[in-house]
Image 1 (cartoon, rainbow, N blue to C red):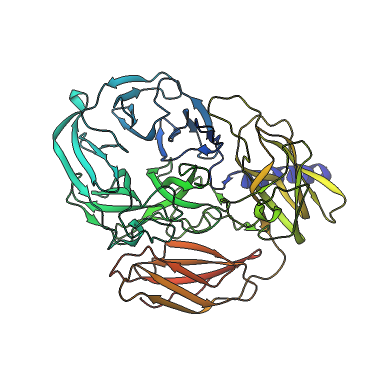
Image 2 (cartoon, rainbow, N blue to C red; image 1 turned 30 degrees about the horizontal axis):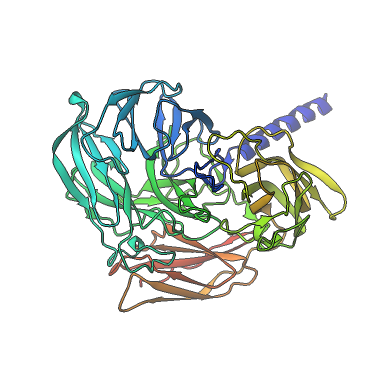
Length: 567
């Protein structure tokens, strides 16, 4: 009897543990990113929009060939579409009077509608919308009035105009200039990987939210191909302005880590009333439009400022099932990266694509085997027995050269673990995988103690077996790092858009997260740094004071630093 009760309790605990393990995600989102039409072998999905409609979330993205739906923001089901122009860029979606309307950057300038987007039965609502459609955004106000925002240019501004919903979205009045270029004042608008282009970037990707009677017009800059791609925001009492720049812009920004960029997306509410920001993340190696999709928690603080939390934004996070206070509550699982710069071996390697490039936390380079044959493998040594919770396998599609519309076998592989590098046990078996996942995030059914992990190819779409990131998450056995001390901040006197930070290296730290913000206690921006104790921040706002904090982290956890004085 007692043994039976214990068995039942163990089963229940196991189920509960699995439930806790399963409700996590890791950016970039685990989607079927489609190959491009040009045959260059890169995948693309970008400029995302997520909205909640009749209990389901719908995700639309550029060049996707369809869209996705989900009941939980975790598990996405792809819906191919022949009735929408899903080959176009920058989709816009809005629900008006229980009807979903869709438009995109397209030559036809059509507006589509549906009352059941689970089905591919969209119809044309309006042909030849009177304005040029570049990065469109639709917004319905509380009073039923509808507005249209648009613009994608390094010269022209973001524009806005009211539409007449009773006359198939005829325009009312003339377009208004809402957001102009200000790269000389707002450093993050200047193009270049270090905001060093010395010219205007591309202002694009408008999106509107209303919160507590205020209108938050969001926009992206300076260009989708840059690691510093982000989203800023202007605020107004009226949907067509005048708008005031929010000096904590870019509110969505991710210039460091494995994959970068957090621009051109949308801000939306989930079933529990939580705000989220979905955005474009960049690879941009084979083509500037080689991109992925990331999801980040967002919130409005008590002063009405919009924020987005991208700290550890490409580590596993837990999906909430209640109303959260994202200003104070973190979704980070605490699973640390165990594979960074660890010893690796491989079955073979192409020149210029060494095995070490699979564990260097840089999605823009990769290890590649010499072939795509079954049996090619890569092995990482964690150097100690560690608790492994999850793995993210990022495939690099070396020499794939596939085009959209081609049929192919998705990646099929096995991952094994070992205590000594000789005797192996299976951890993950995807030998019969049928889902196309180029950035495959896999949570183990239960945590596993292991030192070595090995991934072995079974089959692939085309080309050679290659990995831009074989990322292992869990917990090491050592102590957390010491606290960071003696942070020095310098802002260039002639150009206060630029700051340089240096700090004393913390004992046992693998890397650092530099937090910064425009008010004391509001350090919601962040940049991740590996292997060095300095950081250049060239994307600040001129004449705006900032506060900083540097946290150290390693495989055992995070040690919080001390907030600096005002700079």
